[in-house]
Length: 180
Image (tube, rainbow, N blue to C red; front, side, top):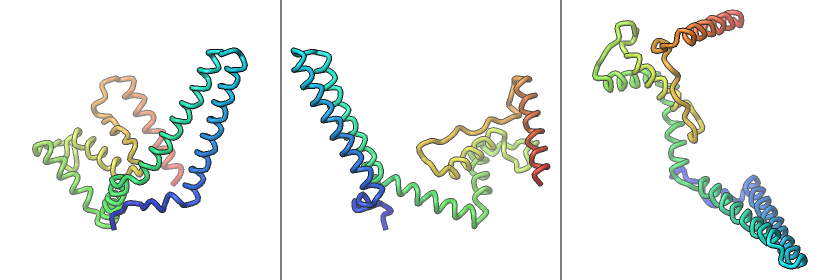
């Protein structure tokens, strides 16, 4: 199975509703453009009304373009292939348990085998940030936005920000203890 949705999925109720709303909105904007055109003719060729008529018809074009993009993105094969790969990667990490160690090995190899004496798993602080970013990206279900990796508190140079982060960490720890 290719993981690609067929064009028949565009006949499901939610898609039919989108098609009907798009048609209704386009029909309304065409009518408004025609109404503005007639108003321009009634007012002795008022240029402003002609511009409004053309503007309504441009909105119709934009609406049709956006409808086409939504349908095209839904039918795009790589969108569904990435989703199936993400699901299989999550299954491996959930059931295998070895994904984190494999990521740590990749990060360590990328760093040229450099080790941080303070890190329990032997990964440098830069490697930990990359590893956290990779795990966050794998866990992110929506692929349109990938948040940046969290900053490493050990690399923070601003003493005021370091103090605030320490205070927030204490508050978070106290909340977790109170919840347990």
